[in-house]
Image 1 (cartoon, helix red, strand yellow):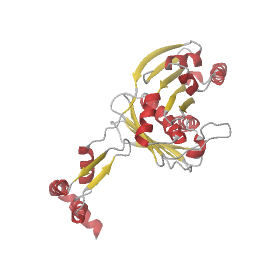
Image 2 (tube, rainbow, N blue to C red):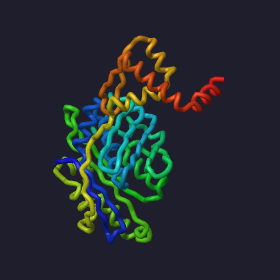
Image 3 (cartoon, helix red, strand yellow):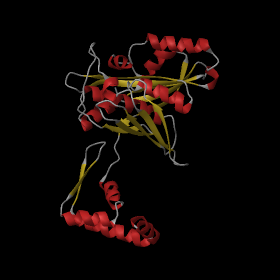
Image 4 (spheres, helix red, strand yellow):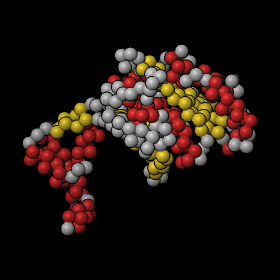
Length: 310
């Protein structure tokens, strides 16, 4: 099955639901990051929720989700946009733990003491960040709590990742259901939705059994919905040599000259895809010259630096 997500409205428009199949993109993330099973599940759940969250917006937007718990995984960072592209990494990919029943212990490796921070860049206003405390570290519960506390939207979030014996990803996907304002005064509707979700098998098992995002939504609504959008999703890293060159140049001439004095080639590594970019001494000298030109064009920056040094 190709990775994609579906958006639908249900129960006379009182609920919106996103369903997604993300097996391939989570596997791509696992390959890039070299994650062990529990870390794969934690990262995969975050990637799935984030790519759905990005699809809630339009235009040239981006969002970054940071999950910082007290577990051995050491944190999760994921970025997504509105066109179905997502990427991410974990602080410590070589982490694995399972429960007594044999399930991946995602809550343990993430840790429940900490915060989820979501930074949104809508390209039309200042970047802003909102946060909420982690509830379980299981990711789904933490996203649901974030939506309620930070965006005041009652939500249900189901996320799942199954891993093969060889550590590859067998199945991954999820859904996010959100109540529209009109649904809040209809307790019978809310009870019905909760009963339908409770009766479902875990999302990862549904995906493994061949369920599509449309079929997952069907399970939740029992057919009372209308699909309004379908979008392909994928793991996509936008790193490149020019981007790293700009990053080095932003360090300023002084620091670049110190690197040149060391006489060593600089190697930069992308956190998201582990691709490496090398910069020779000649490259660094050129970046130093370009950095000097920028400083000369902006003398006020030099004055501020001098004031700071004093």
